Length: 89
Image (cartoon, rainbow, N blue to C red; front, side, top):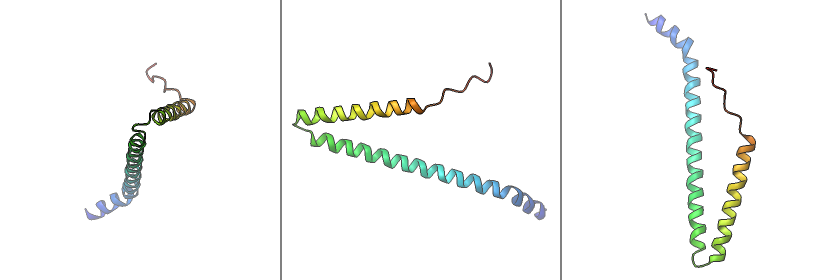
């Protein structure tokens, strides 16, 4: 019976290890994305605080954020793929 378990491990062990490595990479990617979002929010809060009492600086910040948002939206739209067709059609 032990030889059967060893054979199963030898056959499927590399598959399991590969899947664990994929999972680990996905988790690390999520952590990196989360840290980037936290840094972005903190920087935005700092910039807003710096604009307190200065309507011109606040207006410039708003314009900068809108420009960045518009640029990002255009880039996403330009690089997006059409939705997959319905497989039932």
